[in-house]
Image (cartoon, rainbow, N blue to C red):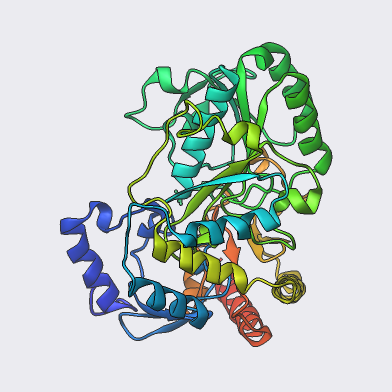
Length: 435
Ligand SMILES: *Cc1c(COP(=O)(O)O)cnc(C)c1O
């Protein structure tokens, strides 16, 4: 096996890692389990490309699962990191970098008066939910199946049987009591939404949603659906949390909220705001944020929160994001969509391309745009592994899971996309020959 493996060094490193790290990894999706293989060990990454431990080069469409909007290791972010680290790597005290970074977030999210920095998206969401509960004095949470909000206990909940039911634990180790206040609904269903509000509206602290769900395929929502959520939240004094950890800073003026002009009460951010370092953030209007310690009673803290190097990297990454970046990402996105659709139309093969801005998903075929997890055909992952390895062996790194999306960065080029499309063509020809 080892000799015949296309990436022998990655393969043996993974075997070794498995002796010391659970499944060889520190985050499950990295293990390549859903494509029935073993992970590629990255040695280095620059721009749109990564090099693995066997010396293979790939054009990377994972981009660290979203953070690397400028591609890997952009020079101005590296400069900011070098310059800052010379002055100390962690203070545990306030510093100018936190103000600088907060200003950059506020400039793009008009309904954020105050920001709190944390170290991951999970932490941002967990804290935002606590804040919502503290502000409203209620415990209920409403979330949607197919949205991912990090590994927060109360949000790792599955729908029980029946309609608009309370959640059941989505993982061993989560007490029923922790998810018992979580209501789970399908996306894109106003009728269920109204029903859930009529049953639970008075006890809900918050509704949390990815306004563009991007963690279980890419499931664009109708603006009317999001607006209905906003209206129902207002009617029932429920806070609306937009989890923009993946979408924040990916669109023209900030996040999906700015594109749709539907404003949440609390916004959670992460991924792209950190320039590749661990940063999460949440923010809201003053009257909500003032309930947070030290101004208010809702407790939340962090030893490494607002870390100087992370703040500097984040600010440097945001400073690079002028309008020309978004124009470039959209132009690349259009080129990707047109080119891939052209290849797909040549083949009788079960994929559709769904794209919004710099995010894309090789979706199972469907006559209508898939907007809810319930509408994803259940066997849709079965042929994805062949597609994934066909592209990987040709030098194109897509996510090792049928339900994870791809990312374009400003470092990608039209030539990268043209190469991807010819690799896709050859891969589909190869797959068709096998069936
Ligand atoms: C990635 C993600 C999270 C979790 O962020 P981590 O930094 O991985 O903890 C939460 N919400 C959304 C929408 C995400 O995409």
